[in-house]
Image (cartoon, rainbow, N blue to C red; front, side):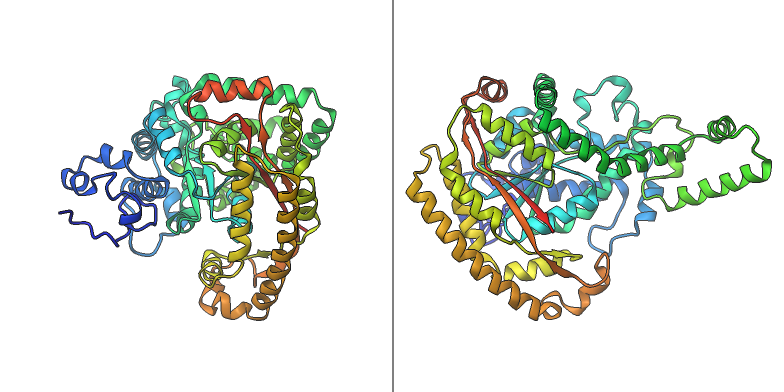
Length: 485
């Protein structure tokens, strides 16, 4: 007889009871008794792997897993080349092979996941997570840590860890910022399929370039978002300036200002020293390294995110109008009539979806635990499931969905009014100090909805067959873009 009680939480990390999860499928008694870490990891679900990986990060950095989290300034000063190497070796043990990766995704089917593709700056991600956590069960994100196996030697973090200290700090900031959301099962972090298939990375990248080059309207969106991105890229350039050695910095300044005095140069040095101390990703460990890997990420391109959404029978979410533009073009290329869902898309677009601004995890959990917006989440789950179905829908079903949406939105509007009336009670006085900026507020937003379609276009079929002919449906998942007004 097993030693794991049937009503206990399953050791795989799914959040389900053992009797409703791995009981009779995976012998966790034997696995835990034998203590074979690779076999234990192989049987963990996404949440289980994420929590185990966070614990491994704490071990590598000698951080307390139970006590209060240390200040970020402490973490950034302790990270060195050995830590970088150990972390990237750990990643390979948690996500070892393509077969293992596919198996993990297959186990998550039906879990009502949405896959985020868009800005992966932590501040942007937290906005997106808090926005969608109210209307979705779980959100899948792509791990920003690089996968060393596919990197050239000169850009391999295991072989050249010094170049990756700044990038590792950014990734640690990502993981530790999202850790509370991961523990609660609201956020899951996975690898990208391209980590196991460089040819897929090349092919999807080329397709994305061709799509941009061949569509003027997409180019206009790209130009607009590039302007918005300019501030972030300027931040990256400013950060690279902080990485310059003393000699390189002096040479750069004298080249820009040949007549600069020694007094002014000293002021520059003091200014740079202050900025280094304040910057969250600068550490003395990589000072004078000369080279550093850093940048701006969107997690995965549209085609790769599409593959993952299909694997978990989920839908896509984005905060990027460019991703929305790519989706619309890809939908046209499926050669399938998708007008059936038009009434539903219009109803979602004209509806208001309020969001919280400036709010932490605890209030979101209270909202979910108290059942606020539960019926609307269930309704969306039903819609995504129907969109994902190979059988499709008829106009009558879409009309019924549209009517139900209007009813659910009306009920949700009343629930939001109740939440607004009892805002301080819901969020709790104890959570106020952890809020990013001031008191939380409720803002109105809107959404754009794109229904999925069987992807008969040759280019879309190519990517599905390149990755996994056996398991994937050649279809476009639904996509939801939510904007705060």
